Length: 246
Image 1: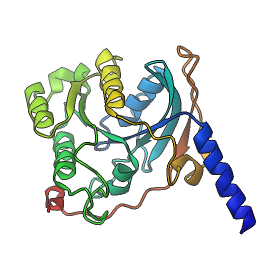
Image 2: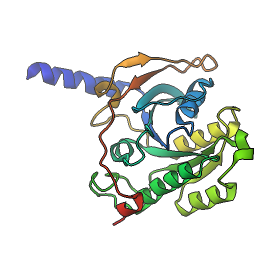
Image 3: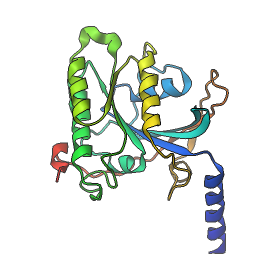
């Protein structure tokens, strides 16, 4: 027992000594470019198409207004769109919903998640929706793959209308083309997180997965980072997301 207490105390000391932390959940259907977007933002590199059937956690120290922030980004696997990412949303300070402008079904999924977030009461159970999610959680909707505009299925105005109706910021970008809109979208979302958290009841990076790789941004010497594979966070099977409304 004394050993356990000492370990807990050591973890708490580490948390207090570390920079403030911001956590973002990136949610979207499979193959909309979530992983490529995250890697592009953190490292300025492009990984092309990447598909994983498990959640991935990226952790990197980034400067925000001159202050180092420990940024954690969970790439929520889109391999099973019938699972609502309740626990990942509960874990996050903000959510980024990503769809492909060339795939209407991915837009419909992002819209459903936004609708569920808006309609779910703050104190709802995870079995019905994202627990402890409030209407004040910063949200952003991003349409990726604008470089394939000739294959577009989702008009820009439609994305703008949906985001406005759900209180989310809106952007379109091409991760492949390294468009500045993707950086502005994430930076704006980070800025909307009013109070970065210095301590937490739990830390995913301490509790989940094993270190499988790392990446540093050679253009930003103040940044350092790693990627952790998370065991699939269990999320309840759901009927159509609109049913999560009270």
